[in-house]
Length: 215
Image 1 (cartoon, one colour):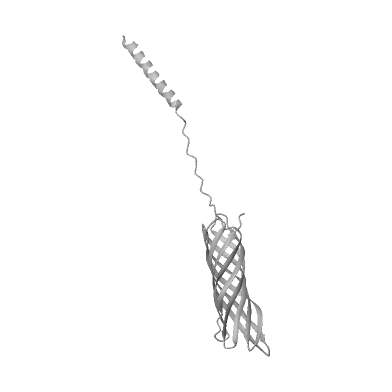
Image 2 (cartoon, rainbow, N blue to C red; image 1 turned 135 degrees about the vertical axis):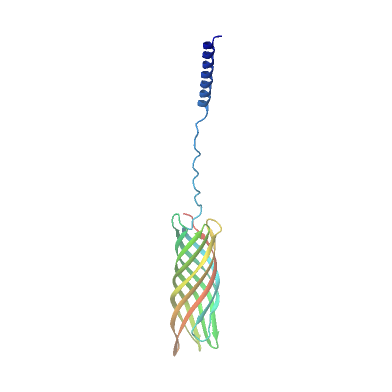
């Protein structure tokens, strides 16, 4: 075999090997980048209307000697929250109304509050299903003074401030612990031939359970 013939055979063999490698490379699947993973969308929001039941204990003070009314409160509340889009900030408004047996007496004088309520604005910060909030607004209560066989009742209006925390057990049910201070101002009570002015304020702790309606 001449040198030229051997060189030609080697060249043809190398070209065939290169062509086979190219064909096999063409058969390989094309590279495709992995699809982007979307960020998870939170499944829970505090937005929406809700109703609830609550109960607790109150203790207060008057400027009528050492009379300090205290007792149980039972009632309900209704409200509406809006959680800002993409934010943990929750804004809301709420109204509650409660029966009360708070009272106290010294000698023949007695002070009592038979019902109370408030309308409050709320600002909260949500940690997913856990919400802490502050609240303030208008407070109102029915109060009564008894002395010397006479009695008089007044519907008092004042202000309230407080705060609390809620935890959403499910998407619709939330548990709550709430504290508030209310100042109902000073009212005049007519007691037969005499009259007296009494101021009243109270502290109250309440626990509640609410149902939030789905959108």
